[in-house]
Image (cartoon, rainbow, N blue to C red):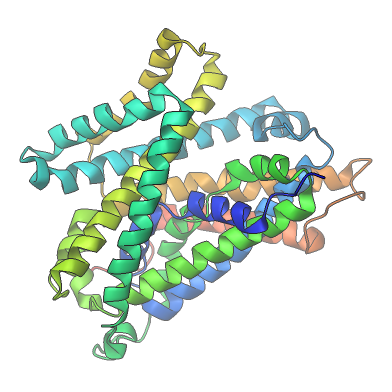
Length: 404
């Protein structure tokens, strides 16, 4: 008798897809909203993103287990909407690689003793080789990186957690009492931090059914939320809100956040653990996102799985974000905000549209169904549209922006 895969295993896969370097953007993005409103924004985003993942499951239910996001979108919504969806998938992958390349250069420049642009080039040339070589190579390096992340996270966060100052965590030392408006600008970064939707079809195939995949998705988003909560409380309880000014001024770049943290952490061991975690998170996300984008572009352009074909895919995957990183080095949080605005398409709007189309079909009432009825479909679409609008309003300076 075949044993069904464990729910813990599937939940951990979803959590690891969510928890990447986006985690490093949350403290800077949430500095204005501070503790209570940041945690509230993350909770609301987690609930909506979990339900939108279930809506994708609902749309997949009448298809073969091997089916992809691309196939179902093309079949149910047509080629034009599918093309737009694919463009946003590519844009999000590209802008995330761009953010990781820029940040890695800024962190590595002191280690390597070269300028940040040269450090970024070295970073891409060395670590993208794993993606070019094979998925197996990515698998092996990912295991090592995740072990580094777990150990450094435990040592670093436990060191921060024991020193949490409640007056800093609740910001009782400042006269500010209007945090809620700043939560709007945080939503695109929060949304990026729950972008697991390209893995929904993999979860369904893994379990062979929608009901178990549904539980794994919920488990994964809950685990990710708990990690974000612990991380934000540990940072906001140590680094006063006013100290985020220089970090935000540099676009939320990770090296600026680490420098600010270093000024309030007394233990070198904790500071080194946080630095190691940050670098491992960026590298892990760079390789994970790089592999996803590499496979997407290989399929899209129909490049062959040969050395020459993989070299073409490598160029299409890594060269554009590297060039943009060298020419226009925007801040980490700014880049992730763009990713969040575009991700609203394939993480909120398209899943809800697919679920509606499925329910309107002949077999719509059979099998798995996401909760909330038609009202939930419109709520998920509304959340996606509002998140994108908030991003563009903040870009235009039309939303309250915290400057420290």
